[in-house]
Image 1: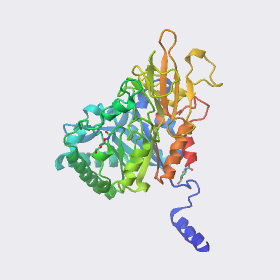
Image 2: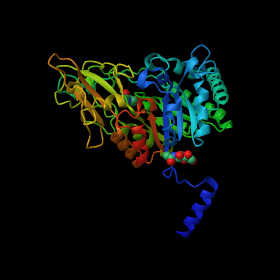
Image 3: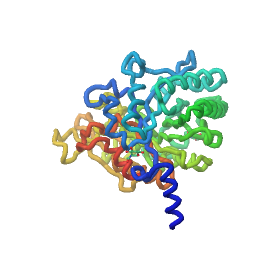
Image 4: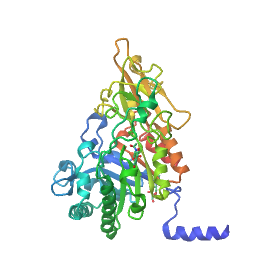
Length: 437
Ligand SMILES: *[C@@H]1O[C@H](CO)[C@@H](O)[C@H](O)[C@H]1NC(C)=O
Ligand SMILES: *[C@@H]1O[C@H](CO)[C@@H](O)[C@H](O)[C@H]1NC(C)=O
């Protein structure tokens, strides 16, 4: 015991006493810069992040893009990001003056650069040494110029084709079996997988000179076993961020509403469409747990219910495409956490009864929260939304602790309740997750 105390005292003398961040878990906080150009309550400025940043170890600014002609990393909105306009690249890295513990990364891709389905340029770039070098050089210039601490490769690999889970009513299994033997989206997937490993190594060799961090994000519906060679990557990335959400979305699965980010496998669903499968894939293929981060969404996916929908709300239920946009985010089929919580039927909300959503929480802690309202007599106004709340986020933290992962990512700050509209407390999902760590 005494020896241990001496040892710890020596360690703390060198590295600083870790009282504030006892757990040592990482908290990556994503900031989607597009939130800057939203309106009213959804408009988020970098300064709005300040209450969140004491709880974040890393801030990730999204998203830069890829210019297919020059193979360079570029700003997708120069007026927002660069010197001639708001210069947010500089604004966010300057947050380090106020929050010296913070590392600020730039993320490229992330589904923001063209629709994922037609983002084949991300694969093409991998194919030659020249194009990879052009990209890597351009990254070096931007990161250094704006004093970022590293890069997140949120590489836009082709996504799985959406699959029907519901064949004829009641026979989920039939619909599901069809997924086997479905044609691969990328005929050269094997080459792209090994080229990506080389690319990551080349990128890290350059970033290492400046002590910069490299992370790789596994985007929703990108098949890890196709594109990520765990052994080849593990020595060249600092972290891999697993974006375990959007397994179901109104866009990909307009006819059936279901849990979008379950921790565990659900009966009669694709056994790969859950977080447990995802984290196990990486761990079982030898990737170190201390480099794995689980991303937790702060938004819900919302479908429109119709007269075929299940009255009880129990998923999966037939649906009729995306629910109408929310009042602040104005994006069909997506609702931010405050847009959902202010619709829930609870004593804090005192508006017209018919607009309420009934919340169904998850005592099993394995599947997530949803809320719904059945259509009215005219078949209108029905809605079903699968979403994260402070409790389900805390359950995900228990999952990463059980598997000894490095930490979590919050995706993203702009869709958490950054104004405190639900209960008056700002960033309830981030804070709940952080305190469970
Ligand atoms: C984590 O540690 C840094 C200093 O190293 C401190 O500024 C920050 O407030 C800590 N975060 C929390 C949540 O205590
Ligand atoms: C992922 O790819 C593997 C083959 O590498 C395949 O067996 C599996 O079904 C795919 N998963 C999904 C969800 O498409």
